[in-house]
Image 1 (cartoon, rainbow over the protein chains, first blue to last red):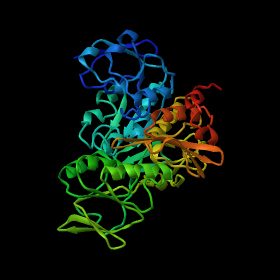
Image 2: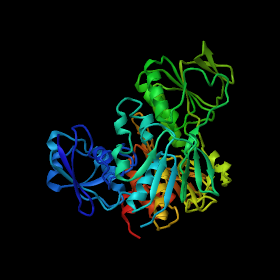
Image 3: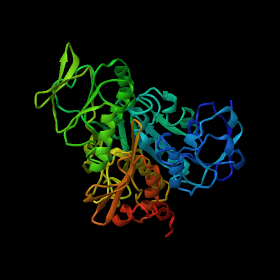
Length: 107
Length: 411
């Protein structure tokens, strides 16, 4: 099962096994990781599951759709080139070892 | 560290968030979370969408896995009902007869389905879509239904209509007023959603009231309207809104109106009791009409964060900007602000193409923005309004006006 490393804003790291087909957001919420709110439950409606993906891993992540790109303009902490909404990061085997960092706040 | 015993009545989005936010903020005392449904606290929005369609299992609905509550020292009591508040003794009584003391009590009792007093309302096949149990039941019914009638063209009724059409069922929606979602959106947006549903095969009757639900051998057979028309159905979904659960508060002598009345810190008329979420009528700086009662995840969760901060020694007035969303088939609706009292609408974008935003004003004051299949507008609108800025009607109407730049401006 692919592993994902979640780094909190203050540097604390948690590693989770995330099943293929589960989103990085879902795995975080199901495992009680602070720093991902996901108010809308994963509908790409709220922009409160914002994460920063380790730059060199961006090519391994699913392509960004228009809705996600648009909602990233509404995050609480301004978007960066490596910003993603974690509800749209659905795990694939290629994403093994993904490292994401949470912003200071989601709301 | 702040301490004392907090009892939260209601384990929906607000109640759950309050328990979680108390701990996140360092609350050191006892936290008891009481829910009247069995099972662990879960998210409601997917019920009328992915969960109903079978795309989600129960595991993805849960707010948190079971272990979370023990880890966070949150005492979760599922399937438990509070029957009385004894304010003098600072205790709540449970249906099972036990009593529970509190230092601070939070009422997050939510709302319940509005049930119309129609003959036949208790027939087998008359369904609702609010909680998990109702949704599980409805999902089974939909799988075998031949004809569906939906009473009420609000968010829930229309989200269900889209699901029922996706499942290939004939669907007829009956609505009392002359357009869909009339209570919350402007006519241009209503027209767009009506067209989308009609295109997917939903039939509508507007300006029509149900007179009775007909049945045979205890099972529903149709809905008869006031004009005598009978719409045949073996599944009737009633989605005419909700009523706030405020009886517990009222019986305890707390002030109530259209909801439990609270101040701008979400405190009731008893300083030891706060109330949050759908059951609350509160003063909002974002509303022309006050107090307001909102039925929304964002509202419940932000109310919870506000009260958690207060109990953690950092009181602040509740000022969060309201936002809402609905997904109906492939159509997305996102709303920011409270638009009650608007007298002017400016549509921006491609109305015919179904990608636009409606800017709602009272005079020149921007009240809110409805974005239809236009998430970028919604994202910018949220930033603009949260920063206390505005977009003038002239700017909204000017397609060359840069909304992104307006959202990015500082100060």
